[in-house]
Length: 334
Ligand code: ISE
Image (cartoon, rainbow, N blue to C red; front, side, top):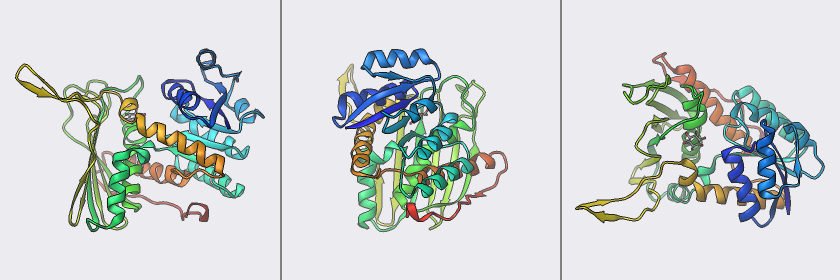
């Protein structure tokens, strides 16, 4: 039984606690904390979590906590991950791993010092059955080399305080990870473009944007990014290979016929769209950690996405493709 402490009891934190307590038999949440301590107390009461700590640091140091799940605000992730790794504890951190490449490098340095993988990043799409199947076909070589990816990421809304840059670091970060994973390739150049703005977007941030990437092997990726005000939560991905194309399936939905119309319902919430991926992801993390080491996206993967995000945000308004420059991959992640 893996004894877990959760830092951050907001929406995704509560969802992960529910999974860990009710769906994953070999996991138990033994402690939680939140910047708003009442949120931690309420969550602890709801799920019967025995210990509530005032701070993340106290939770990380607690002797009953064997592994840590970080679901706090994006800007707080890196410091908690580093602290957890220093304590020699296994850490699952929601995306993004950090806000800067330097913070990711500090985490990797500490992990390398400890001599084992202690971090998994919450890029849950790698566990979504549709993406998994696409990856299998690409890797089988049946369709030849992958040449291009056309993707789109459409959201209904974002929370208060959302900014243009977060369209990359918080939203398109999923494509930054999944595309390099599907292609087994790293990024070489990146550019973000502002396109004609939607009249529906009146909240002060760019929407839509287009993300363009070129990989080391010459594949090209375009991602249409609508961070809010779209008709639903819609994630599309088409991989164009030499001998054919692969499309991510839409989530299943009943087909309704009524009033001379045939329709299906689209989802509006990302937590519902990827519910299966999240379930599989956390169950896999718990199992692999119990066996010794996590097998999912590593801090190197968190770093690669962060570096690409940084190039994209720097490219905004420059009309230039910027280099994505990464350090040499440490042995631990090869
Ligand atoms: C959220 O944090 C996610 O992870 C979703 O996948 C993304 O679509 C959404 O825009 C983010 O806020």
